[in-house]
Image: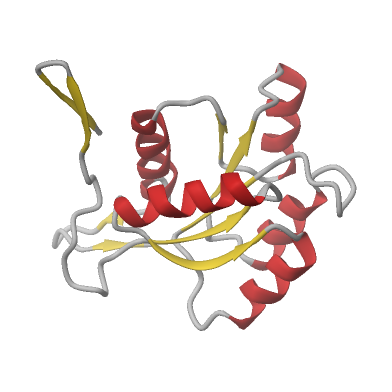
Length: 156
């Protein structure tokens, strides 16, 4: 969330630092290094732990396979040049159906959005989004699969 105090804007942590077991994790696939580094810094500031990061689809698949625990979310570019179209989303959904995927692209045409969602993305966000929109979409897709039990305990 972004807070405005006077004329200054502040980034507010929506994933407060608590016990490490509660800290949310994210995997990032972004082929443009500068954007990947910026996104990593934003996620760290928001108290997300980055468990996998890559600019290459095959390397990302290998990193995911080696993880002890699956991430709470995947943020991935849709226009990947090393794999045809976004078939990576189908692969990820097949192997990690419980992990929500946030498609993150500069191309927000209806065709691209519809294709990303049809291929397995759980949400779409245009790269020109605000930090607040990024935070809200991550909360939205990571909370979507949670079930509140009668005793108040959350589970997937």
